[in-house]
Image 1 (cartoon, rainbow, N blue to C red):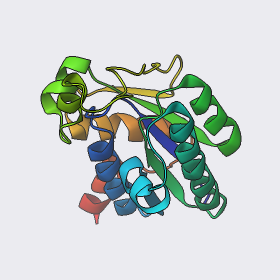
Image 2: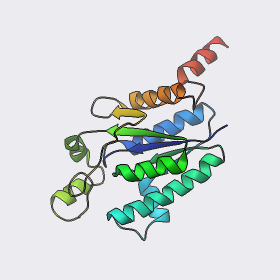
Image 3: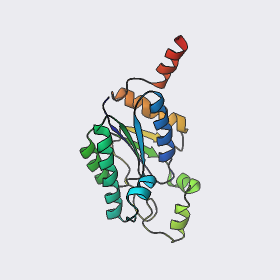
Image 4: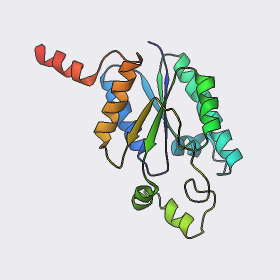
Amino acid sequence: MKGFTIWLTGLSGSGKTTIAKELQKKLLMLGYKAELLDGDEVRRNLSPDLGFSKQDREMHAKRVVYISKLLTRNGIISIVSLISPYRAFRAYAREELKDFVEVYVKCSIDTCIKRDPKGLYKKALNGEIQDMTGIQDPYEEPLNPEVTVDTDRQSVDECVDTILARLHQLGYINTLIEERRSDAKQR
């Protein structure tokens, strides 16, 4: 099996991690090897020395790219859930990883602020933290992602199904969940 990287990018609170976890679960159900590299988890374990400046974010993301490269060359699907706000860095990741599927997890800043699962927007709006993507620091939307899901309008399952359908269309996976279900019913 050929490894590849699914890179989910979007604002904090857009649903990247939730979608990535469900995507991993469905890929494993289909018999694929898939590992999740969540930005917060990787930061806690491999980048506790880094802050949130542009330079620190890029260093953190380079560490994620390196791990993803190791996984993919060993036939594992690497699912990366990382804000990765700068187009130039995502272009770097695409170049380094080659088999790269960019997924834009689109969500309005208003919805992200309402969700605010970590309380970061509240802190940023109160001036307690700096460099918050979408508030003090820009988020550069992808120009040509392979997949766009809109969590303002789509459920988690709809987002995951959209990603899986596109992976199938691109030739990265050869079995869809619906096909697996119909095969099971025929038995």
